[in-house]
Length: 426
Image (cartoon, rainbow, N blue to C red):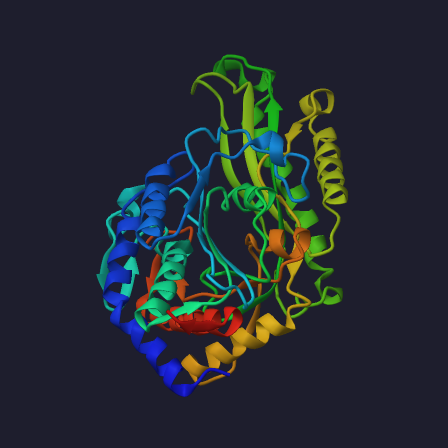
């Protein structure tokens, strides 16, 4: 139990630093960090860690060093232009439990910027919200880890357990940034990831598989289109087979713990398509990218075999593809689902911290997306808690985060650190 006076002092310390927290978060949101452009934002995070006296470890991911590890996802882009960053608080006299505070710096593409109400990388605060790409997913949460630490020190306290502040890349497409931290040797008694979980604790999340389907056609002049084979139209003919598979997986939800109450936990998305070379030529090629969810415990190799079978069978019904079958490339996420289990002490500490701030019980939710928590919980034996503020329109236009929710979840995180790691006078 925390002394009520300490609880009050820590809440007040977060409040006193909240204007600075908003300003720093705006600086991070203002710095675009889509895949391949993360380094300027990572430089800001590393500088902020150093300003707090934290030794910083920054390195480029070596694919060969993690390729053999459970949870690795294949990647087709270079890691040469971005580092993963970890700042370490080493307790002078470590008596408390250790903690990883993990968040991702990478954000998804904006789409057509003219379709945003406000420019996506010009973060604006209005009506209690901060707007901008990555404000919700998850730069506000990532920045809050440093300001929770600040609040402890502002109150004249310091943790008695070691803390590792991780700012990782690649969460949005592989998770290899978090995996690289595990490969680097970072371990702790628990991990907390402040993803935008609507002030709830994530109990379970889906797995995710990405794959790319490459089709060939037979090009002819459009004047004789019926004598060719249109690769783009062939692609569209394959979509129903994939959606039918996903619906069959959805039908199993009643037998899957934590997912039985959801209407549609398994979502399949055709996320990208390209093909053809000329409007008056029947297209000779088409490539489309797919994301599909899986359940915790569902064998990914078996799921991949089913995807291959569905596509192969559907292709047989298309005369040209029957003799020129689609090529499937497994690129990006090959992520298993995850259920938070065996974390009673960590959950109890977060429950108590949340209750102090929100005057109510901490709810548990099931997520139809994935987070980096799976690396800690499935592969490192570390309870992976995911808990963070209310956000809207993540991955869409006009993304935003609720600042009052951010303030309160930062307060709860500060109290959680105090309870989990222990505190002493600085």
